[in-house]
Length: 423
Image (cartoon, rainbow, N blue to C red; front, top):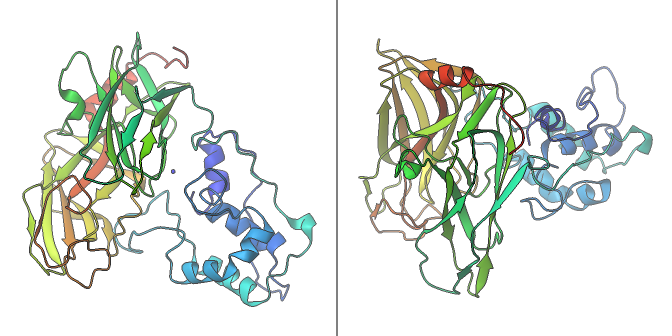
């Protein structure tokens, strides 16, 4: 999706993991007992790093044992002190709290750095926590169903690859409620993003709509993104007879590559009272002037009906510098939800509100983005040129996605019979 107490959270999310309790990681009060890997550091790494730093996952190396952590200790110290890792970009103390905050506390960082500076003792191996037993190499655990792109796509060594679209039939004979899903690139070297849309046979053309009242995209993969894992009682719906539309963004590597990506789902195994969908505040008409280092772009969406907001997914490209979400209520009151002062295109994070926010009819979601199109931005692919909206990463986007339940959908979901876990 992992988080600051990941070993507990993923078990609760139903991933089928066997996890020991996360406790006593940083409590060194009233004692001079040395910090050891076995007693403290192993638990910190397990909770904050291992979800990505293990075989088959996004990180380039594993951190699942003492030898590996010790070997990478110099880099670990640097990235936790400057807070590049664990990756989390929401400004502290601004806006709402987030349930998936994966940043480390100052006390945790101090414990880890003190252990590294103190010679990295292993300690008594009897103090090591129980190993997390991952039930599957899918982050959602063993899927109920896995779809593949209908054909392999070949990416040529050079050139611009327009977005590619593919369609897969679900062959569902009844509506299905999905609590977890995961997009998996077949060839991560060339797959920049995967977006899965659902095409409802009763509403032709609705699959790619993200306007108010539509489902928007169903799930997505992008750099640094995580699998969709909804809370119990919440689900996304795939209607009977629906098809999946794959939007694939490929980037050439300099040699011929092939890809056939996958999409996995888990069905709800209990009653559903909340239907989750996605919509957006978007601005496609901007122009970022050449060498502008803090160009402001705004987007708004006014709610014509009530809704409950669960999470936020800001999206820009390499010139993205900062992003914020605010709600402006009909009485003029403003509520800042999220502020990111140091946006990183390499981490397409979804920020899950610790407490969902209900908004009445007439509320406006206001998104504000800032872009750095100057030579001072080391990631700027074309310094000195004005930039407009475009699909490719050397162009720009400004989208504030948010994931919610419309009030009418919540009522309809409660009227559904208990969801079934089989086809």
